Image 1: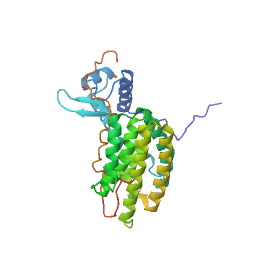
Image 2 (image 1 turned 180 degrees about the vertical axis):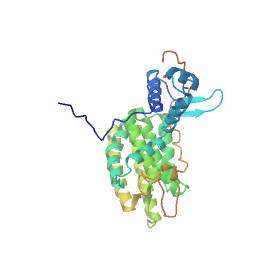
Image 3 (image 1 turned 180 degrees about the horizontal axis):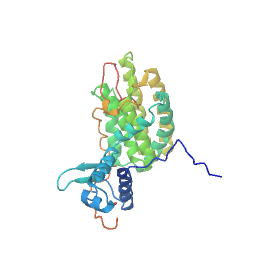
Image 4 (image 1 turned 90 degrees about the vertical axis):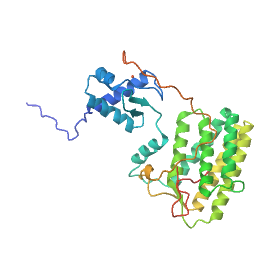
Length: 303
């Protein structure tokens, strides 16, 4: 009896040659323990190593550039240089994932409520004097009673305070998740045009007071006190955002590039690794927010 041939409608997807090469280059980066600033071999060397055409190598490198893993320069000494994937790029990927999912501001704050207290508590033993100076500078900038900055700048500094704490936390996954949420807050959360300026001022004062108490407890290395204060801070921030009619601008599917304006730097943050000189790798034995017509702090909101 003849065996009936299976005809599944779902064919196994075959990767393009350039995609396979891109995967091998990523494997090479991992195996050689390369870091941001290190350079990949030249195109001709990669072409010889993987035995593919120049066009395939260029397509693979372009794919890695789109992913945010490398930058490409031209000329005799050009090629690929490894870079750290920007947070903005990661936010775009997440927006694509959430394309058909309804994410509300309540969802975002529910996650903050769980993560921010642990982030702050974990940062306490690692905060340096430079970190404390940065935190205190942020408080001055975001406090309406002591700052002459505009509302947008003050709200940016609210978020920057949390970025400074994140930079001090040794858990890279927790740090990344909280920084990603902070970037969402900067770029995507807005307030309705009927929110009185007095509410924004009250919100800023509450945030600044919580931030001062958190810094005081952190200076005393009181981990549990910092955790408890951050719980209260997130609870009050959630209530304030609802009171001020905070919402996500459009949907998360919006391209972050269309919302972005220069981001305020995290002042005095000292956790970034030192800059390294780029080095060539041999191939032998191979690898921020803008105000719009709503009285809104487009993406600059909160604590």
